[in-house]
Image (cartoon, rainbow, N blue to C red; front, side, top):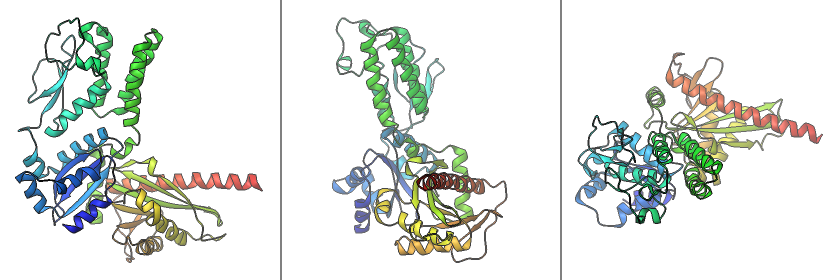
Length: 421
């Protein structure tokens, strides 16, 4: 248990998903957290129910995936539970079945609430969701798009507003504070949010704010502006938690199998070197999660150790060591797989850098452009995948993005050098 508590200290106080594993690496439980450190610590700092106690007895390791926001963590948690079906998510859930969310667009004044089964009634259904998650989704959706909380159908008119209206969580249809058309636009804007299309939800909210401003309804425009700021804050860094599409997960699963990795390579970081005859030598690092780029985690490096010499092998050593030691090692999560542009010399240089940075357990491979061969450290026998392999296409996409990013940075440095001279 002491090793788990040591690992607990390294967990970031950021939104994300945590994975409890047994000694064989099997995922026992997937949970989401607004603060990973605080949530996981709660398992060790207070008495637990008997089922949770049994889970902790089997717990041997803790992994985590950072998310850009609480909503991203909710979506990612649901995706991972559906993918891995951890036994304790079934044993510990607080509902007998995975419920749906029902949006009653078949009503004059729609509502959003939890149901156990679908009906052919003209309403929209979303899910299924994990039981403990679904209420938080409702809370967040109504925080952004303040439709009514009351259960009555049809809605009755009132003379005095309810508490939800007073605290800004309801738009007040019962006291005629919003037109039916505007209310329906609010309800319909929830749809992309529940489908995980966060950018579309943001666009719809912005459209409503602009419409209110054009109609000189400045009170409503200000109200929507505040909601817009909430959603924009939730979307900061959202790539990190975006749930991978099934095709992306298939690529990752194939890559795991072909490389014989212990864990699925959800986070992959790739390095590339760019220079012309040893001048302005630079390196790039790109990060992908679930097959999608994490541009907030991209990094540029000016190579310091070469002077005017062109030496990609030495440059790889420098940049890999700098990434996985010092401040960057603490600031960014460690990847499941490292990819360097090149063959056996580059990948062996990367391994030496990892050993020097005390990160020798991180998997590292090289992808050579000429024959698209995959090289492993200390092995002259490359792995050759079929040209139509999903795993190869994933590696090529990441390698090419690292190359693009490095070349762009090199051109910037070269332009500044020419201008300075």
